[in-house]
Image (cartoon, rainbow, N blue to C red; front, side, top):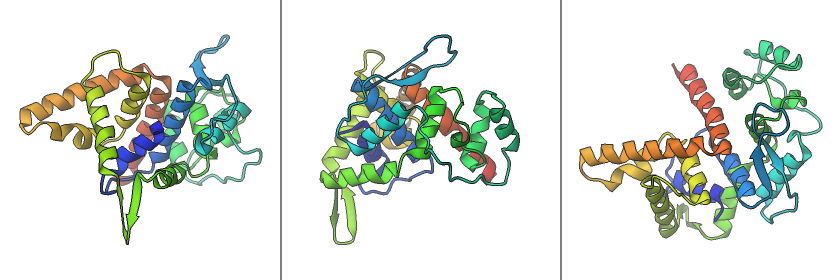
Length: 263
């Protein structure tokens, strides 16, 4: 299974009753890029005098999965944005951000709240420095229906089945993926790269400790210890993975936007 598919399995849960947040596509995009890196199609590094890391395509040959191949093609093109910008900004805020970016300014973390609001888009600024965050944002804007396409793949492979009006995940697949994440969260070093990326991206979901870790222990004190250890392990893994770090930056802004909107 692809990392993106495993991520969806964990988010949907066995009875397909998991919450789907507005930032779910961002995690799927991060999983797709991680897959490209692990397959040797791309890497992440600093080049020349660049201050920040960026994603570079080193082998543009298709992999054979439409979401990965589309992401690869968009990255290879350099912009990741459609040639014609058909998007219109939400007239709420973001005008000063667009003016600064238009004048050659750098993208700032605080700008991402307004990106989530729809007040500006990377597609407006083809000359933005191609940092990992900018490249992930461009993919988010340009990649067609990534979540639905990953779910379609799970249906085609039989991981998601339908009986009458009910659909559900294969419980064996769900428990296997969850157990591998649990085992990874108990590990202090030497994680295999694929499970490291899955753990890192899954840990950015607000409910992951409750759904993947807590029910391991029946005793409250042991639950707390399991949560603390899992959180610490995941945080250390995220720091070592540039793609997961970029996704965290973007999804943190989403949560801040929600807090502001709902508060």
